[in-house]
Length: 298
Image (cartoon, rainbow, N blue to C red; front, side, top):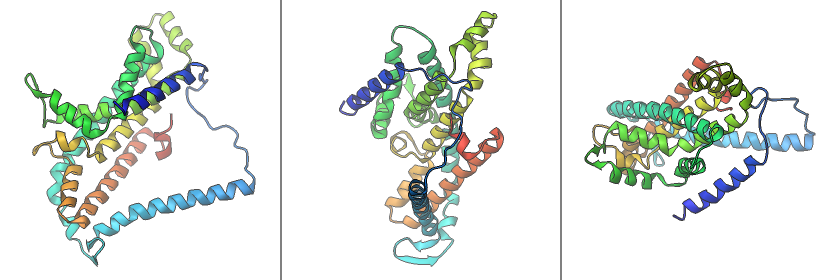
């Protein structure tokens, strides 16, 4: 309850601010206009800060790859491939994580964009309650969500504990607020006149949504799918409670390797996870024709 109260206050403030102004744009999204050159006393300190943060992140994540290539991270830095060879036994868990992450990403993206359309375009009783209930999920810890799903779906007729379905649903709704808020923000930039014109010309609401609304919200949709996919691949809190032997996830296996006292092998797990996420983003960038930065831009 203590976590829900701040979330409610933040939601009300955000709702109050966004209702006071119009954010409609001609191109249904943010575009870079004329960039004014900054004076040197502002530009170079900011540039130095960005370089420092970038190098810090490279050092942080680079240390994971270093730890994966030594015998005992923090004690014995003798190079070895033993940790990489230990990843072979975790390939089934990696497959499970990919199945769950792709399923949760697609499910969360679809539900997020549909809810955004209902919240931003439709008028019906309980619209604000629906918006808040879908958003407040982000304020609840993953462990609480995992326990809640076990209690709710651990008895007939919904005995789903330990199945892929319950993990996909939990991850999709756990990160749904990001896709929802991104889609709502994009929806507010689209002039309702476009949809009204389509309806006036005889198109159904479904055809209007698929041919007019969705193409304009495709950036928000893909941004939500990517975010949910990445978070599902790296999440541990809810997975600890929801997975079973048959559906054990890669992050759960990595955690168990870490607590058994083999940090170098756990670093190899983390390094492989980073590589897979980068490859997935590269494939999606190639398919959509967008850069890494544009994938997250609405």
